[in-house]
Image 1 (cartoon, rainbow, N blue to C red):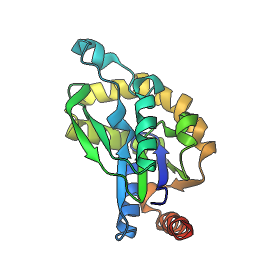
Image 2 (image 1 turned 45 degrees about the horizontal axis):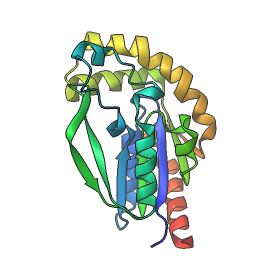
Image 3 (image 1 turned 45 degrees about the vertical axis):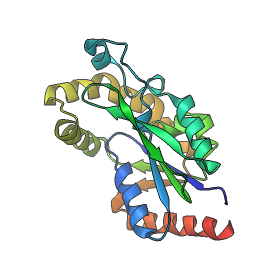
Image 4 (image 1 turned 30 degrees about the vertical axis):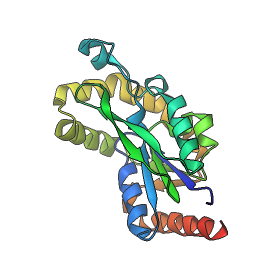
Length: 207
């Protein structure tokens, strides 16, 4: 088996990373692809009371179990399956259940802090940064957290101002320099998606 291709897709919260992933999947219908969200690797917080979990900065590198993510990626790249953790965003801790993920020809790794970690960057064949205006990102985040994660409007805005925005400026935006491809406007940028898909096909043919 040839080594799978690892594609890292990063950008600020609400930038459209998932949309880019879906567009890649849509344009490669005959390929086996596994998607790994960095969000699944938030640290387990069962030992903390709820008030402490709520206060945690989920946009800081320390909030992730990066060593486990790195090991799981290496397993997938070596053709081995993994038990990927699952995260409960309403209770701010890891679920008991895991998800069995088989190694595929293409592995898409998606998350806000991927390029902040040299060990993760070194594993990636293609590094993509989704660049979207801050006002659009914050509106998307508000809608998502209220709809999908059981949050109130006040809590989302407070979290954005106290941790999300400062962490973006410190850990996300400066690491744009590591990207091979920067996509303005995310999944709506058809030209950029076409370029990425063409590059993926080229690497697959070489292997």
